[in-house]
Amino acid sequence: AQKITQTQPGMFVQEKEAVTLDCTYDTSDQSYGLFWYKQPSSGEMIFLIYQGSYDEQNATEGRYSLNFQKARKSANLVISASQLGDSAMYFCAMRDTGGFKTIFGAGTRLFVKA
Amino acid sequence: NAGVTQTPKFQVLKTGQSMTLQCAQDMNHEYMSWYRQDPGMGLRLIHYSVGAGITDQGEVPNGYNVSRSTTEDFPLRLLSAAPSQTSVYFCASSPGQGMSNQPQHFGDGTRLSIL
Image (tube, each protein chain N blue to C red):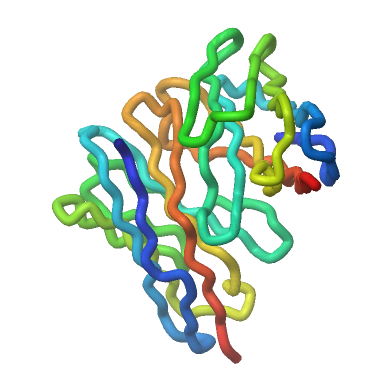
């Protein structure tokens, strides 16, 4: 069965510093997709970044990058130059081979300190 | 462009009551899913659909029914509400096969309390 594990319930980071949010996954599929979403206190789900299992380059989107280590089954999110507005819940998610369903981890709550 | 619309936004039920959470999308997406979000547990998949007339169970399907009669609509039914079903419910949609790199679009959620 597929599983996503986020081991950091909460993280603190100083404004303007970089932070890494951990995500490990378990799947027997060869083809899968990994996503990160942000959920601010207002509750909406915001897509941040995507990494395909066959992508050789780590994905980047502005201040977000995904540190993808396929052999270790990890897909950590790196946020560079943290901003106060980055304070939110962050979810790692995995989509299966057929793209039919996506499962989520328990999330990491990030607090950015001024 | 409305995206994914969920109704109602808030609902309070008594134990044993039934109700339907509505979800509609206007993006012609093939895939739709229902999740529940509970503190410390992230989003857990309840049911999902890969097209009109096709549904399947997710991680936590017990106590919930779904149907997909049209591409646009994917209602979630609670048959006999229990306090354990108190949660925030999210509906999501995404394009179909061949576009698995596209993210899900989420509704704003329904906050449901069962007394």
